[in-house]
Image (tube, rainbow, N blue to C red; front, side):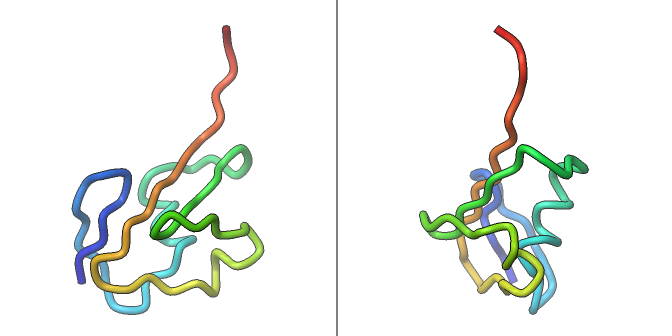
Length: 66
């Protein structure tokens, strides 16, 4: 199936979870937030939230600096 991750199309397997999608973009373990179809997904549900065809995923990472 195809999902949009940060505006780019990605082909992923059926049943791909939010956690798996996040790992395609970053290895960061903290400072990461995710929204699927404009709704925030809490970190505690990343492993159990499956993505669907044509879902829009936004992965945001915090950065330090000024």
